[in-house]
Length: 137
Image (tube, rainbow, N blue to C red; front, side, top):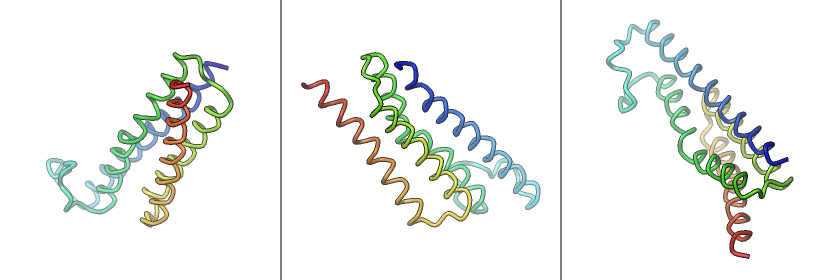
């Protein structure tokens, strides 16, 4: 059961790969279509077409809160604390991150994205709180 914690980790990595590929498809396609010089496509350039900005933002989002997910999975594995609750929590977190990315790169309604983000963070904080309580007990 211990190694099962890495299945949701692999799913998050797969999501990152898909978002990375989508970002470049959008950036290259939009740049070619709108004749945008490659030098203009920088993370700090917010004057680019929204599709380029959004795809880059989504990519960067996967390196913010999800880093705490990766650390949690490693700690739970190393301490041999993997159980059904952590597995369910991890899979739920991954599902919410997938949903967040879908909303972000498609219709991007901020309130929908925000709700999914907050619920995902609450799942993550719950797992961290559970781990902290287990370690302090």
